[in-house]
Length: 561
Image (cartoon, rainbow, N blue to C red; front, top):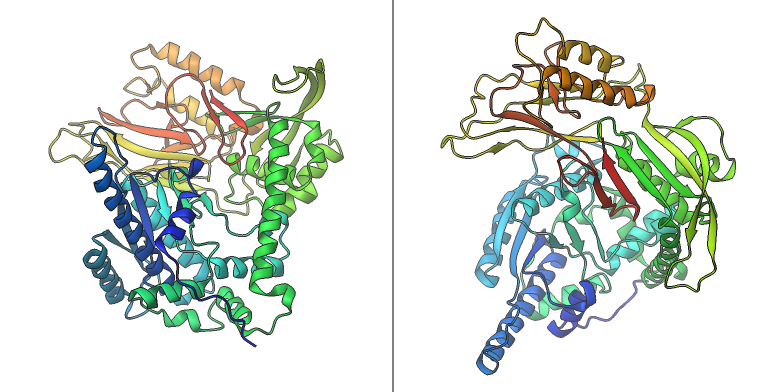
């Protein structure tokens, strides 16, 4: 039996409350909003509601300007709709253009069609759903960064939430996974895109059932374009789960409302755990060496009592410096957490693409926080671990990245920045050329990890056979002897294990530089040309330390040489 829910359409005042609730203090909306549009009923309902809200704000602004001319008002946000053309169906391109035209003509939205470039037939892969999701979010992320849009609205709703929770129940996920889709989150699948952490996804329709979105479009005369592949029961896992949920054959405990309530309960528990975790994070720290990516992490032993919250923290810490996009929860639960907090491992071990090495434990005294009653000094035991990229396994291909020269600026007046590329999931690199730089004959540079490569690079860079002295971008115009002293000390300070994780630059088979240090064989780069290199979590370039509070961990992270 099919379940019947309310088909009451969504009114603009209700939508306004849902949307404003996602922003700090329920305050004014940002000046620029992005909107992800597929053309389906969900995203078209969201587009229509956003249009009505903007109309309402424009009317209110006109009224205020007429009566309170001396008081500033916040203008309605500008809206850019991004339409994804997956090229997965013969009619997808014509539909994308039809959607774009409709949004421009009816709502006066700015629009941009983003086309997925598949390396081969999209349906030729058994991971079509996963690949399409990755392509879609990466296109959206790049478009938002290009247009300086940091707030992207998507039309996920209550039915999507129920489907997600059911899929995760089937997969045996933990409490955090059963929290389901978050109302506000970082944009997923974009770890390889520099500055992707600036983009946030907002889901104002998450508390709303799909039937109300349909009713809104029908009642308001809004057109939408159906994707017939969404009705193919076996095309994707989500399609299958959607069909099972709508069939009404599941027990009551797995009906939509029960699944959504489960997600809310798990989300509330996870939030309480994370708040408790924050109290301990004040006494934790992480220092990352920007040359090798090696990290020293200090954690209060009491974190070992935090269960799921502690394991989530360890996974996020590992993902900041590991050569993996995702560190499996099972690895953290069964290996890392057990050895760090429970078993008290005294020897190094490898897990999640990293070598975890205990550093001599120490005890540190911290005075109680001012907002608490003074209880004297807390004696806190700290566990300290060194995290280093695991030595590449011979049987697996070594990471490699090619950096092509910047395209010359035809006007000769602008600095040309190539796109950032992620190497080994740890370092972002790009080539840069200043105005007038002669880069037409520059050779491609290949970045690799090589055993003993650091020793070979040091020998090659400072070889007396080189016709030109080495170039050190961090401190230009210093003597070759001084450069050799600085670089030599940096290398000496690295542990043997950390040296394997330092990226080595090649032209052909000749070593030409160490991009994370900023030193190059003289003559490798043309005058006015450079290579920028930053760790994935690093927020700025330059001398000295870079202190950030990691958005993923809540932990203070210091990036330094």
